[in-house]
Image (cartoon, rainbow, N blue to C red; front, side, top):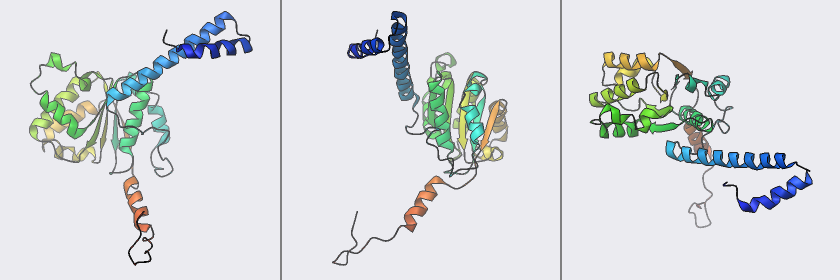
Amino acid sequence: MDYPASCLPELVESAARDALSPLAFLEQVLTGELERKDERRVTTMLKLSGLPTGKTLEDFDWSFQPRADRRQLDALATCAYLREKTNVLFLGPPGVGKSHLAVALGVKAIKNGFSVTHFVLDDLMHALRADAATPPARLRAKRYFNSALLIIDEIGFRPLDRVEANLFFRLISARYERGSIILTSNKHVRDWPGIFAGDEILTTAILDRLLHHVTVVHIDGQSYRLRELGALLKAPPPTPSAGGAPTST
């Protein structure tokens, strides 16, 4: 048992104070041990996932982004979409919280026992290019193939060349109805041919698989980053020092 021995005297004292039966005391000890094991599991899976830290549903600024459908996100947080192998597509302009919410759903997935892998698109393409010659049977061992949830962030910031577009199609095809994908994009799906080497046929094949089972989350509104920039621009200028030079902070 991994329960620290230093905790046992306190547990025994608490059990005596509350007049717990031996069976109730044992249940308390085992419950604590299970909670510790689950905490270690979550910590390990978060590290393996590649998810950025500090992005959860609890710390999302819903008041600043009122057009984000909180009921829709709360439903996704139950992880039912993962059990149904459904994809999630976040669409909206830069800075509205798409990446934050995608990562937050990844955190929820890990806490609910699902494996998660997170990639920014450029990093994913680097990995796919490195594995381009890997036989399909060995590709199944890669986390971007076998995780219950694959998160692909920042689709649309640059176009993919034909090799990258075909590798992306291979990934989507391999995961189709086998695992869920969360994608974030600043471009509407009608503009996706421009992302995938200008190939409308290939883009259609990708979208056909992605959108067959999908929940689409549209977010419009102001950019968080521009809000911070606006606050900076409105800040008063530094007060000059006695010598006439501005003071620094």
